[in-house]
Amino acid sequence: MTETSPLGTVAYDIVDRIAWVAFNRPEKRNCMSPTLNREMMGVLDALEYRDDVGVLVLTGEGTAWSAGMDLKEYFRETEAKGLGATRQAQRESYGWWRRLRWYQKPTIAMVNGWCFGGGYGPLFACDLAYAAEDAQFGLSEINWGILPGGGATKVATELMPFRKAMYHAMMGENVDGKTAAAWGLVNEALPLADLRARVTAVATVLLKKNPVALKATKDAIRRVGEMTYDNAEDYLIRAQEAANSQDNEGRKEGIRQFIDDKTFKPGLGAYDTSKQKAREA
Image (cartoon, rainbow, N blue to C red):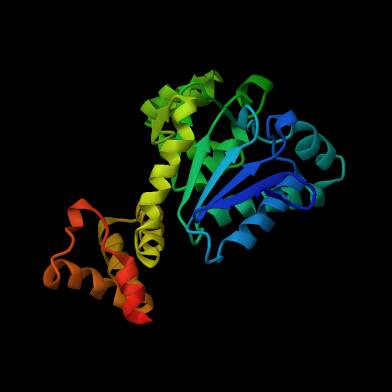
């Protein structure tokens, strides 16, 4: 059963341990307002440690994923209230994007339609991203006289080659889902009719993985990119030790099933985590 945040700007339901969270302002192409940003943080809080949630998927109601920041509510009306209100709105929006980047559970962006400007923040925050082939991606800020702020420029340079990022930001032209996949903005583009099934399949694979290892892995991928090799090597050693201290039985169970039971091969899939839970019980 679909639930909504108190003011209705976010909708979500949980099906087979997948939380389907949606921007719920279809009449505004799911632009992010201060209200939506506050409510999204509340939804993320509510879902993060629920036992019946193993993967979170972020999508949009209607024909858009998110067309970015609400120009009227986020910019004009907030700026009219002064610098304090502007800073609060920034903290609330950047805050839930940051929360999503380091979320406890794996996250997937399912881009069903328009994805513009500020929408690149949560797009990058998700661990994986899949898009409809006819979805539209754009950094249109240059067209109305500003630079792509709010992290959007950083997202472009993180996900795309230099020349593609420069062209994308300077020209203000839209690209479709196929091009977004080719440029690295998303993992894959599919016909809209096939999008949910593909995301469900990916989420189902993730649900079979060791959750402690998944969290450590997604954090490591984000951290090591800005490190030297030596620093990354040291970080990864410490991160593995920390993961082992939290769930050493998981590591032992995987080795047991491979070496002793010969019931799985690491290159062909995950070990059976249900056997670990049975032993622990």
